[in-house]
Structures are given as C-alpha cells and as structure tokens.
Amino acid sequence: MGAAMTIEVITAILLIVVPIAFNLAFFELGRSFDYPNILRKEPDDILRRFDAGGSGLILRWEGLLVSALLMLPLAVLLAVVLGASPALTGLAIAVGAVAALVQGLGLVRWPFAVPELARRYVAAPDGPNGDATRHSVAVVFATLHRLLGVGIGEHLGYLFTGLWTLLVCASILTTAVLPGWLGLIGIVIGIALLIGTLEFVGPNERDGWALAGTIVPIAYIAWSIWLIALGVFLLV
Image 1 (cartoon, rainbow, N blue to C red):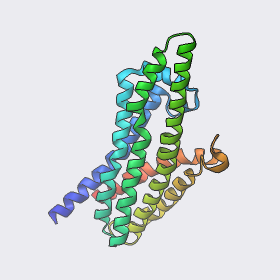
Image 2 (cartoon, rainbow, N blue to C red):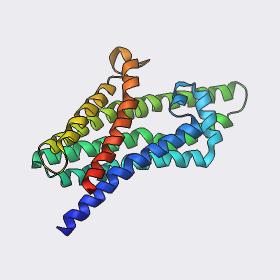
Image 3 (cartoon, rainbow, N blue to C red):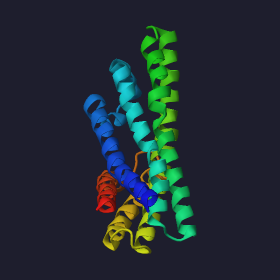
C-alpha cells in the first residue's frame, strides 16, 4: 500500500509540475523571443534574433525540451496508477512515450542545431560569398523547421498526444481511480488535438489550415489544465 501511494503521489506531482513547467518555458520564450509568432518571420530575422539572445535563450529552449521529455515518465506512471486492462495500459505507455519523444525531437534543433546555424549566418561576410553562405544556412534552417518542427514536433506531436489523451480517458472511464467526468472532458481535448494534425496536411501543407491553427493553442491550454486537474484529484 505504501509503495502504491508513493507512485500515486509522484504521478500526481508530475501531472501538476510538467504542464506548469512547459507553460512557464513557453511563456519565457514568448517574452524573450516572441515565440511562436517569430516563426512566421523570415529566416534572416529569426537567426539574427536567436544569435542576439545568447546562452540565456538557448537555456530557455533547453527548458522547454526537458519539460516536453518529462511526459515520458509521466505517461508510464499514469498508466500504472490508473491500472486499466493490460492491453490498454501497454498501449497508453507506448503511445505516451512516442508522444514525448516526437515532441522532444521537434524541439531539439533549437538548443543544438539553430545556435550553430545562427552563428554561421551572422558571421558570414558581406559580398557574394557571404550571400551564398547565408542562403545555404537559410535553406538548412527552413528544412529543419519544416521537418522537425512542422512534421515531427507538430504533426506527429499532436497526433500521438491526442491519441495518448484518448487512451488515458479510456483508462479513466474503465477504472475507478479518477472521476469519470475527467475522462469525458479529456475526450473533447484529445479530439481537438487530433484536428491539429491536419494543420499542414495536403492542400494546407504550405500555408496551414487557419481553423486548426486556432484550435491547437486553445486545446493545449485546456490539456494543461486537464493534466493539473488529474494530479489534484489523484492527491485528494
């Protein structure tokens, strides 16, 4: 009983701390780097501002990366605490782990690849050679942004986070650990996150789907509050 209670408390703490940490890191990047609005600007603006941000900005990105990766132990512990059927528990752990990893892969370019790109971009001399260097750096940056950011971090991130949320809801509704209404609310949030996977798909690949772009930030705020609520109810 003592060990079970310890796991429940640890899980509850993670449920509360992880979304708060992620949102604090997100807020700090918004305050210091105009994130995510800056992503709509040209690579020249992004890379020069990133270089000017120095090590403090890199550490902020590292904070966001770590907070995203903390979803991995959270997904495992929550599945164990909810104690649904073995199949549902295993599926929730697997999908939750993938969700954390793809979110991490989407963010890892910022504290490691982008600093080098920004340094090379800013250090390029004036003249044809410098223009060629800056053009090459801008192409690499844009490619990483579309692959790691849009493709892996956002598309796959929304997909697996939404699926994990629905699996957690199924676990809540088939067990008695947490109130069933939390599972019902989570279903709506999970579906909203799945809609976000379509933002840059098919005909929307280049410019994005405005409706999905509007829904996703609201869904993530609701998702963060929902996770905190799960943690609070686990504690009480």
